[in-house]
Image 1: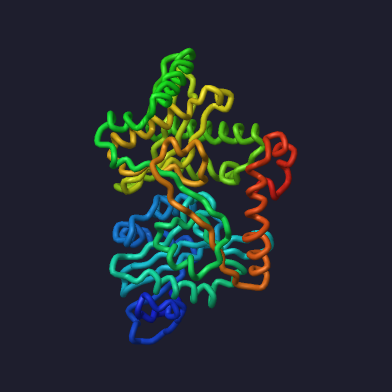
Image 2: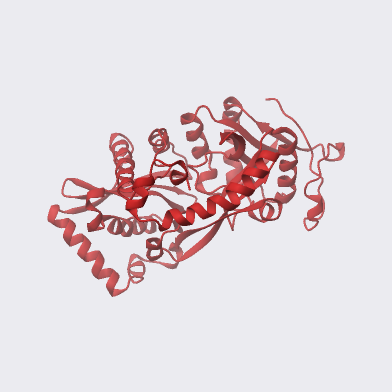
Length: 405
């Protein structure tokens, strides 16, 4: 592995002026930063990456797991890796997983697995100064990345990176919220059931009754294999049909490699990672699906979808109830409904976590793109996009700015 080495200057974490210093002083020769830029180097990092997941200051999300990154690299073979790895001696203590992506005529440095990874963050071992490592990482980026822009999307307010990027990067004015349900407040399923109002219980019973006209209603967690492959393909297909009816576009749902990526993930197993593909049937007919992932005590509801012709019957509402009950029974501590925020998610959540976008220009073109598009045009287009009726969106569906607000 070719290692380009630099050493962080450790000092008071409150001295923000110290964050960007970059030195190769032999006094700190035990600390070094290297850039992983090819797939063989990435594969060699597996054991150390997994160890850092267990040792990080805060528990990472599933989107920082090695399983997630590995599946992405296997299915998106043309991605240009730029993974910054910090070492104390031979021990990996810091990881900043990035990749370089050409976009709109710019070379952009962004989170590895973007846009499939719903949250971005770094990992840093306990006892390390994450701000110092991030300062060193950004100095390395400025010296070696040769990009126009660093763009970090969906940085959660409780992430390790957020305190640093909030003061060191430009706010892209893309404010999101990630809803979640704290499952630790329910000791039993009866306590979970008590959270519903009488109106919500009546609605759930009505949904079940309507579905039962098609046959008995059954909720199943599918075993890995042909059944999960079919469920994944059906889920994506029905989600895209539902979006098309509303004149909307989702670049994750529209990605040609997405299905293969998810099928790869269902076959990834470790002690901390599990793909959970659930299906709701009415008689012999599948009516809704959830593609979820359980990682270190959190169930991530990655994709929920239903047979789009049955939208008026609301099978997804019943499915969500059963999925949350199953997560509770499995000992999960949190059920994450993730970004983007939608009003309907509130009834399934007990709290929200802010998630924001940030960017840092690295060239004149990057400064122009950031100031004109990311901070000005994009937030405005996004507001308009979500207010337009379905009929107007369908007319505009072929316009690029309407596809990717």
